[in-house]
Amino acid sequence: MFLILESATMNILLVYAHPEPKSLNGSLKDFSVKHLEDAGHTVQVSDLYAMNWKASLDADDSTDRQARPPGMRFDPSLDSKRAFENGLQSKDIALEQDKLRWADAVILQFPLWWFSMPAILKGWVERVYAFGFAYGVGEHSDARWGDRYGEGTLAGKRAMLVVTTGGWESHYSARGINGPIDDILFPIQHGILYYPGFDVLPPFVIYRTGRTDEARFAKIRDALGQRLDDLWTTAPIPFRPQNAGAYHIPELTLRPDVAPDVAGFAAHTA
View 1: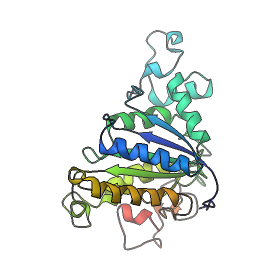
View 2: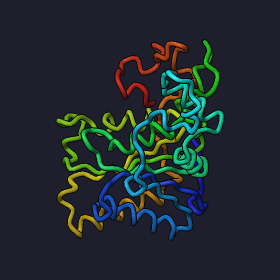
View 3: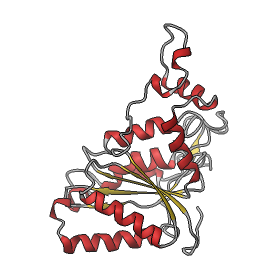
C-alpha cells in the first residue's frame, strides 16, 4: 500500500460505460472530470459507447491475421501473447494499454446491469488485459505463481469503482435478496483490479437511481467529490497478496492458520 499527498497532481483514467450522455451516469462522469481537473489533475476519459468500442475478443485483435497459416485455429491466450510481444495488437488495444501505463489512478464507472458490468466494459477488459500485459506475467513455479493478486504490471496504481444501481441499499445488504454488494463486486475488484496489481479502494455505489431528484443529486455529487479528493489517502481494501505467505503454492488455497473459520470471498480479505 502507498499513500500520495493530496496536493500531488496525478494522471487519472476514467473508463466510462453508459450509452446515454444525459443519464445520471453521464452527469456524474462530467462532474468527476471537472472536479479532478479543477484540483489540478490530468484526466483522460475512455467513453466506450462514444468510442464505439469493439467488445468481442477475436482474431481481428491481431494485425497479422492475414499472415496466419490457413486452418490455424484461434487461441485467445496464445494469440494475445504473440500480438502483445511482437507489436501486432490492433491500435485501439495498444492505445488503451498506453493509458493504463500513464495513469496513476483508474476509475471504472458503470451501471450495475444483471449483477455485473455492461458487456462493452467487460469486452474492454478482455481485449486490453492482454497476455503479457495484465496476465501471464512473472515466474510460475512451486515458490511463486506469477506476479498477480497484489503484484503485476499495474502495481503501484490505485483503482476505484463508481457504480449505479436501481435497487435499494437494503437489497444489497448482508441479508438482502440480491446478495451483499461487496460479494457482487468481488470478481471485478479482486479479479479484474487486484489481480494485475492495483490497490483497490472501496467502491462508490449509488442506489435507487430512479429516485434521484435535484436535491439528492447534489448530495451524491458532493459525496463523490469527497471520494475523489480522498483518492490518494483512502485505505485500499485489504485483499491478501498471493505470494506473501497466506496461500499454499501452487495449490493457491489459504493456509489452515489463515482465517480458519472463514470461507468464500471474505476469506481473501484480511
